[in-house]
Image 1 (cartoon, rainbow, N blue to C red):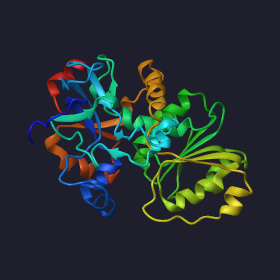
Image 2 (spheres, rainbow, N blue to C red):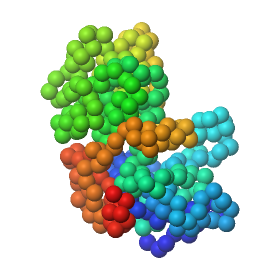
Image 3 (cartoon, rainbow, N blue to C red):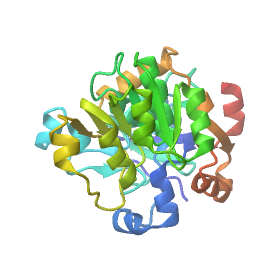
Length: 334
């Protein structure tokens, strides 16, 4: 790819590290969702950290040499959602690496208003996973968490991050649910107190047992699996909270009356990060050492090993996979 051009309100970033998201797997496999959503030709990838190479003529708050990441949702700034503090659900959103060129390359172009400044001491491999960390932070903090029992259903990378965030924010017992034994052990490392392999036992029964039959007060649903969503609603305590981040690939049926209305549940649909509240929250946790994300990064590969990386992601035998774009600089950072 040629070095991309940038406009007067944009920033050119030399990408130092990037990471694979579940969305990128959909794009790599080119499934029905990707075929219907992704603009082509394109460079995909949206989780990154880098160094500013150049800035447009109108950019004054960012300069060459700054260490940055970026908010991947580019919003209109004019609609009702944007003007009332809900830009994360702007109906006119364009997405970095999906409908706009992304970061799996040497350079990326970012709207200056979407630039996230990073501490130069923050390693690029950690800085590049702040985007998914923001998803976890918004999911965890969508309601009261202090002292509450928490079930994290789906222990992929964002679920693992949610465990660390919930623990740092003072929750009670953490129950991790998945069908992947490898990732359940990672959940233990991140701070889960109870592990439930739902391929071997009923997750609802296991959660009830762990909560003395009361149900769990906060459910963080990260898998998007229809059965897991139904179980999440059944395992939630009366008047509990269920925050839904996992994206189903089809419609999900459940008993709305018995499992939501009569239980008085609070349901939260979670998308992206609140702009920009979530970024300040995650930076307060990350840069003050309240959470340690290093155990989540299980593989560091160069970008030319992308086939190996996506095979690993598809197998589930990994945590977060990071592409190191400049190995000499990464070694200097560590």
